[in-house]
Amino acid sequence: MKYFFPLLISIFPAITMAKSSNGIASLIGRFSGIVELLYTFIVSVAVLVFIAGILKYVVAKKDEDRAEAKYVIIYGIIVIFVMVSIWGLVNLLGDTMGLENNVPSAPSLPGRG
Image 1 (cartoon, rainbow, N blue to C red):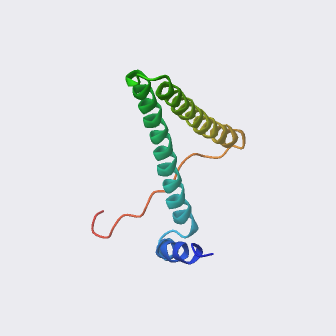
Image 2 (cartoon, rainbow, N blue to C red):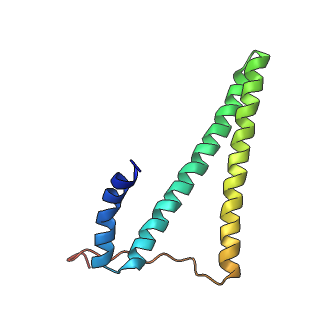
Image 3 (cartoon, rainbow, N blue to C red):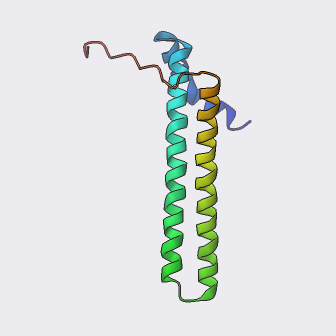
């Protein structure tokens, strides 16, 4: 509950902007853009963790350090696999249901054409 009101306050300008431009379609477009950025960020972090685990394994001299690096590599691979699987499942469901994969374009600023 303590995070609800700050979240509501931070989303409120987006809701009012959506109401003045294209309505709910603009709000959905903004939300999908945020989700896409978040997805890209998570996959990027998982790839970096995987690479860091490989580097840690190569540099490690003790068996304990190598075992820890193996866990980092395994968790990186699991996260990458899960995220790519979710992405594929969403695309498969979208294609099966005949949904279009396009995001509404944002309105142009006045005077910018």
